[in-house]
Image 1 (cartoon, rainbow over the protein chains, first blue to last red):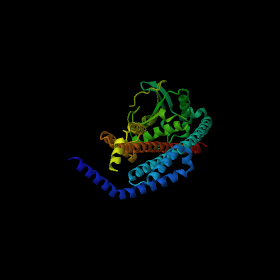
Image 2 (cartoon, each protein chain N blue to C red; image 1 turned 180 degrees about the horizontal axis):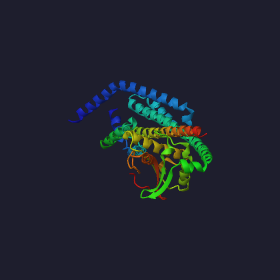
Image 3 (cartoon, rainbow over the protein chains, first blue to last red; image 1 turned 120 degrees about the vertical axis):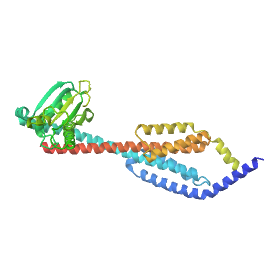
Image 4 (cartoon, one colour; image 1 turned 45 degrees about the vertical axis):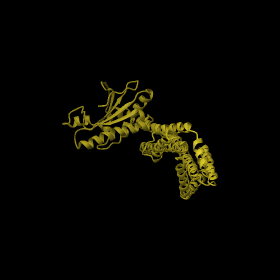
Length: 271
Length: 108
């Protein structure tokens, strides 16, 4: 009783499959052409061939399988399937090739960066020697103290032009000292904190303090200290070290502090 | 004909290995940072889900096809993430080089 309807429905299913077959065939034909075009592109790209030969071979094998299947009737789904897989392998090959090219370029640029870092260090050293001791004693307000936040070095206001974030060349000597210290103490990390006085817009002060701290961080990084060892914070006019009512006090408050971690790399908590 | 195709279906073995492979590929893509925001990754995940449902239905051929496609979708998503990351690194190093050259220009 039950069998006849089942056979009938199977027949119906097959017929409907046959009807859809036409549309399916067109789709699979399209997929096949697409996969073939993708494969041609990677096959003719020497970079892709060089860096991802296995993916290219897989793309070719799967394309071949899809092409062979396409000569059989009713194989539309399989053809589409293998064409899809082939296209994916072509795309993966392209990505792998791009990745390798990027990595090779990165390695070259990294060498260039090291060369420039050395050159910059030499230039700064020469500059610092020219300025001599006078610069250190007179221009750089440099004080290092040990307190509950750890070892803290203060870079004074005169190392920056008013309203500007760039560190002046008179800071060369100090910066070189910090770099040397960090190189001798490879586990130590630093947090660079910017502060301003309370004159002006507090939002702008916050930005300026952050920018100044960042520019100190940039110089350290340019001289070869790894970015991972440098944190940057801007506190604006918070945490003044002196009164904001006198010119002298305001000058004291405009500063960048370099907080050093202990020799194990443990920094005091940020404020 | 009907019988052959019926047997064909019945004879398709359960693609257990393929499903494992696909799950690994999806996990690996996730590990390097691929998310559903990426079309390839979203496709991979939905096809894997479909493949698992097909397995439960014992539609092994469908399960295998979905899983095979999902595996490559995931691998492509992974490759794209890695390429993107390296491109970001390149941009970073280029910016640093630019800054270094500027500093050197100022120092000399």
